[in-house]
Length: 212
Image (cartoon, rainbow, N blue to C red; front, side):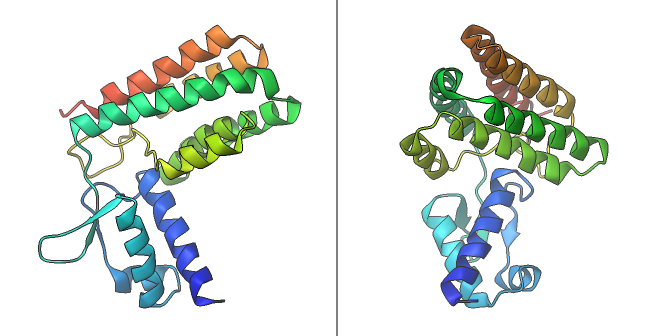
């Protein structure tokens, strides 16, 4: 495999784990450790980390090293606002454009999420959550919107701010909310879908701000 392909694979894998909060705030990303995990050389890992640094998903420590960026209360609020603007806008296009295959794909992702939670594979559930929202954007049928969403590097809300573990008590509600969004889309009921998505995003922000 070419060096740039190895670096891109490492970048993609690390980015996915950061956005799905499998790598939580403040986690140090050691080059040698990830080189071993991803079966890559340290140069490829360094290139991937440098790329993530440029996208502000990670930061450099005062004494060196790379760490997953810690979100602040302000960050959480801005993320919710951005997601609402992009995803509510996408919903309006989805209602007009989505076909039976698109609905089936969203339902399949919901089933994957349910299965992951039932089996206790919470990292996989978080990845399914990211996939649900990315697929929602893709179903809008606008490449520019997809590019903007991906470039925004929007993380999930499964981690409470200030905590180092995945937020583990909202998976059932997340599942219910995802399915209600899909039900609204399937019925071509924009108001129902918008209300479900707005509630989903607002609850996620509130959950992340619960510092207890």
